[in-house]
Amino acid sequence: MPTVQFFQPDEGRHFEGPLDLNTHLIRHPAATFFLRVGPDVRAETGVRPDDLLVIDRSISPSSNAVAVVVRGGELRVERLRRFDDEEVELWGVATHLIRRL
Image (cartoon, rainbow, N blue to C red; front, side, top):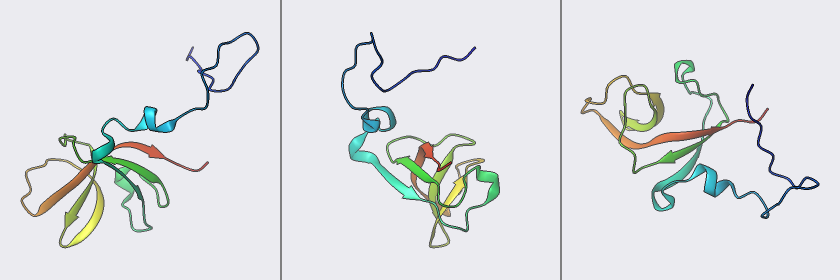
């Protein structure tokens, strides 16, 4: 059975204060930015229009990673199959996806 972690005070539990999403989502603050995904994202990325991506520029890309790249002069969100394409400039690797329910 999965473990559920609560981030609000509960009777009898010690509570340290408000939940800071920065501590959970950002490993390298100076190299991290957020990107709201546009309507033209490709379905095979697993990302949907209007999702918010946390992008880390300091992470090296790996196969199958979701990344922000410049291809043909356009900024795009892509799932990397291999990263040896010289026509692609890597802007960063997605580390988290935030989606409205």
